[in-house]
Image 1 (spheres, rainbow, N blue to C red):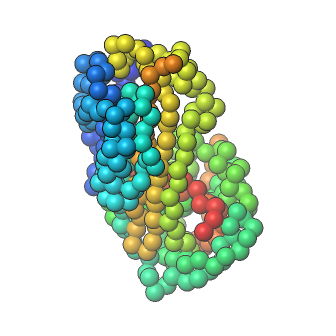
Image 2: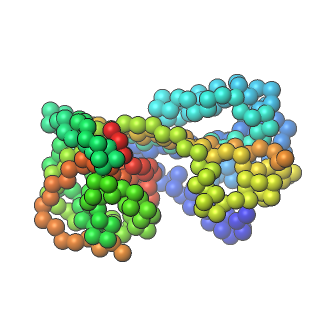
Image 3: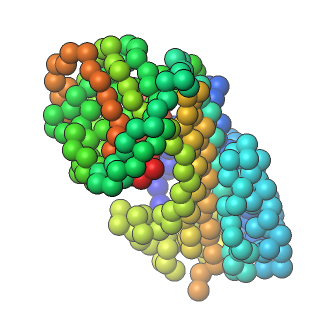
Length: 315
């Protein structure tokens, strides 16, 4: 459990982020609680004050299918129809708490790619298999960095909503994405941004759209988060009985990038059940051809954080 001072710092920071989001990005949270469970008043207050979330009582045991349908309707509404099917079936009968978080982003490029310049060009799936895909073209002043330490290049494409931009990270080697991913972190992205130079950039960038489903439990366990998934979990800050453990942490994301801009949405749900130095090198005006696997980050410049992040390996 977080100690009190750290807990208050985290809650205050999350509230500040929600308060500072501008046009184009929305995030919403809600919590479904097993009927009859005694949720602590302080937890309810934190949900409302810091996460803008309301708690609602449901009967998971009797109405599992209905609750799942309601969750899917909620995800559909909060992501503007981008994500419709979050849950495939009914919830476990012993579900006690379901935490839901949805994020939606729609950004129009500051300078749109011209549709009549889009061409069918090669893209190398997994860095090896050539396919031809619609590839957009843009030439303008953009922030760019060639990163020797990461063996990659980075270019920032701004949205009309000045708070946000897309940072494209392209490995020098066609099969270099795994090595690049292994080095990425918040601190590294900060260093990349600090190393940007404003240049005349010719950018060839493929149109793409995809959806992904992830079970976050294995990743969280690898990060050292273990006890919350067992009967040793201490979630006493939620219910008076302290009889909960985490059973599932799922994440679903959808993104579409085209000549006009970007639409992205993500929903994360967490189920609790009852226990049983990369310096940029100087560069001249450059051409960037994103023709092999790459990483992208939708960056919130005001809050200095990534709101969406992903990789494209296959088109």
